[in-house]
Image (tube, rainbow, N blue to C red; front, side, top):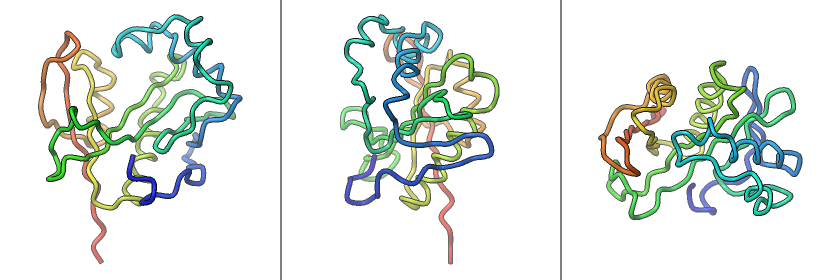
Length: 182
């Protein structure tokens, strides 16, 4: 995410028509375990982690950090969204200083196919555009991940490049908020 001094964190919970984006809480631990141990979720991100390992290493209150939102539906966590600054070795150079933010998301399989990811990601991008006007965001996904490719298009990401990494073709897109002119 941005430098801590430039954006107040955590923001007030973000409410959409059906969802709430908020900080993680102790009650989310079981859902985090399900998310990280899920074979379906792990398909395009290097595979699931063994459940016993996740249970052992995940703290009682999952990590709270700038840029990490829990996505809640009817009081229960269904996924996460992250907006983080890319590491120096992974910069895409869509900005002159190459310090762009990257959007990442993981949703439990039972939440797939209902538009929750699009709704939550659009809300997080809206918050980001208000917090850091004019800042671009990148999104990277495997081209084989058809759902993620459709979501990127729906959110307005445009292709920057394709490349090979982790044994598969990857796609990188950029999203640029509309800057309000006064």
